[in-house]
Image (cartoon, rainbow, N blue to C red; front, side, top):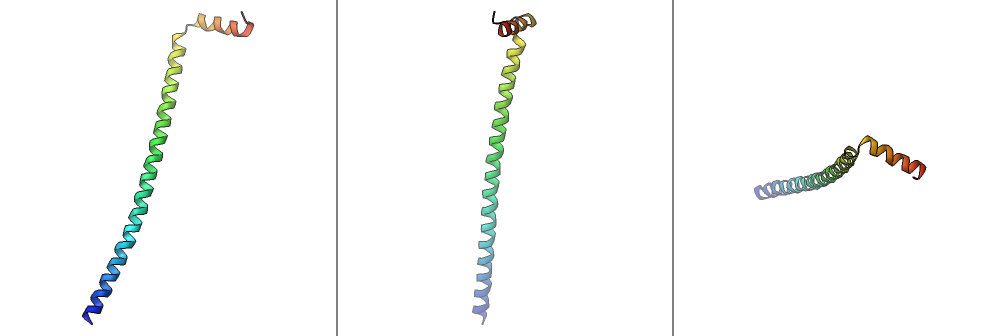
Length: 78
């Protein structure tokens, strides 16, 4: 009788351990997936910010007179 009770307890513990392992595996997989998504979003934001800064510096480098001249050239083709 004691052996049967011990085996039942061991079986229940094993089932519990397996269910916990499955939950953790899913949780870990979800966590890794979320981390990858977050890293991709951060990379996209950094690239967008770098592009914005590049354009901003290009705009800052041109004077008002140069901008006016460029605009008139484009508008009238001269």
